[in-house]
Length: 226
Image (cartoon, rainbow, N blue to C red; front, side, top):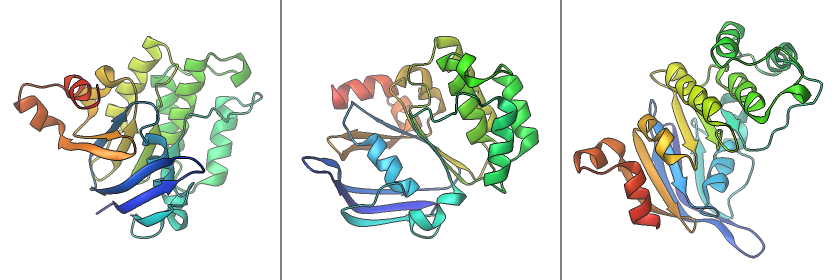
């Protein structure tokens, strides 16, 4: 088992991000974590990444506490933290200096595939910066990738290239946990779908099981959360 969450609750001052959340996440799957705004998607991924502590419950990631294994997983959040002076070359030096699992050859392949321009990020569009951030994240050789809204605010062409890169880079044994509002565009990636509603699991199912019933992930999303 790659990760386990057992009756996890994260309480903020006036609300709860997730409530009594229990999930098992296996190796080698693409898991879509879907829900409306405020449903707990970002909280769940940050808890798994060791960026937040649960108020109650237990989380195990890669065989231990999330914070102890943060260097062994990838977390790509919504916040664009790239420095304005940074170029893709600077990104390579930055990642290589931080992570022993960084793969320069894969990074250059992704830069080419995603058509990331070789200029400073301050001169890039939001879509171009998003593609650079994804190239940096996917260039690490880890078992778990936590991607929180990697398509948010990105133009259609960039979203298509990002989705294709996710398919291209996914490897047997690695798991991608993907949170996105772009359900229709991403649903072909998902092997498993978890729908969150008000911090709880409203549905946990295989995407193929939905298709066998003649349903899509989009229609199920609307049915369960609409």
